[in-house]
Amino acid sequence: QVHLVESGGGLVQAGGSLRLSCAASGSTFSINAMNWFRQGPGKEREFVAGINWSVGSTYYADSVKGRFTISRDNAKITMFLQMNSLKPEDTAIYYCAAQDKVTRRYAYWGQGTQVTVSS
Image 1 (cartoon, helix red, strand yellow):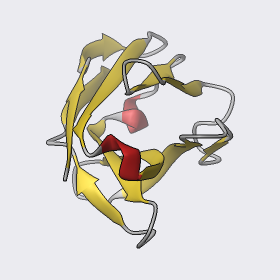
Image 2: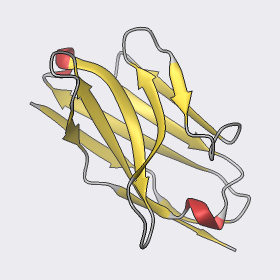
Image 3: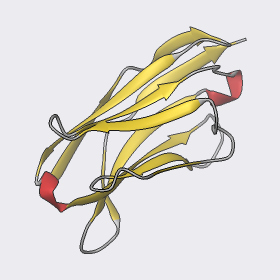
C-alpha cells in the first residue's frame, strides 16, 4: 500500500503562483510513475502532469504546458507541482496519484487539495 498526502493548495489571484506537494509513504518501491490530476466544479477529472519516478521524464497536458512544472525529490519521496501564471480555469481540486509498477494502474490516490484562482 502507498499512502499519498497532498498539500499547498489555497486561494490566489489570477497570474499568481502556488506550489503543490505530494508526499508518499508505505510501499513506495512499487511506484512506477506519479501524476497530478484535477477536477474542476462541474467537470470531469483530467490529467495535469506526470513524472516517471525512476527516469524523471515528465509530461504535461496542453492546457498547462509552459505554466506548470512537475518535479520530484527522490530522497523525500515527494512530488511537486509548481503552478505559475494561474488562471481562473485552473480552479479545481488537485489530486496526486501513483502508478503501480506491476499492474500499471493508478491504484493510489491522495485526498486532494483545493486550488482556487480568483479573477
